[in-house]
Image (cartoon, rainbow, N blue to C red):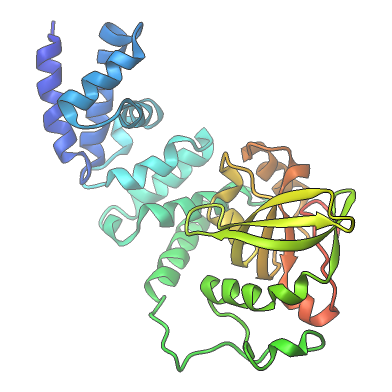
Length: 319
């Protein structure tokens, strides 16, 4: 019988290799699962101390290795597959997990290092909300589309800019922000530039009619910002958690619909989450921590310039 000391030495060796090897991470997870079951099940805090003292990782990180071991069969992990390729698959529905994993391993065995964990996350999110069952060939094609888009994403120069905005309304902005945003940062800049004007426009949020009041903070972590809004009598205050996306569909492709922290409003340039099928909406609902009727409202800035009113769209509303 392997002693706890022997298991500790084995795990220590495996974790040192785990960052560059999914196989090593899986083996570490198998032994950690055995350690937890045999020696620490009645004392999770002691397990956390044990992993911290011996491996320099928290109990939460150790649990990620265990989850990987339980979710993915060893024979489906070829030598050379990175652990960052495997983590996104752990919480994925079994049928989707195996289909994506088969594409990653069987068809792309000599090209694994061309894609990243973020690429796989985007692929999983695409497959999860698909209206139909996708073939291996379609999944593979989508993966390479995602990889190609990332690799072709070049550093923009100041000579590159969006097309001129068509100003039916908000002409005051034309002198300071004349062109459509071509990045999420540009979208944030445009929204902030016109915020003092938007404060004068009432909009319906649920059963209330509100006005934007102030931008409390903008950050890089999800959700991107918090904005305060007030009713016309300035008695009802709403704190809105906001996520900026150049295209609203990126909210899904980036996996934000699975986040535990609630988002109230997606601010985008182009709303391309229109007319999703009932099947896609149901899939999004199943993956979300919140009911589908609590999916963030959507505010499209290009629509503001076209119509001159703030209209928030629902994911479930027929457009």
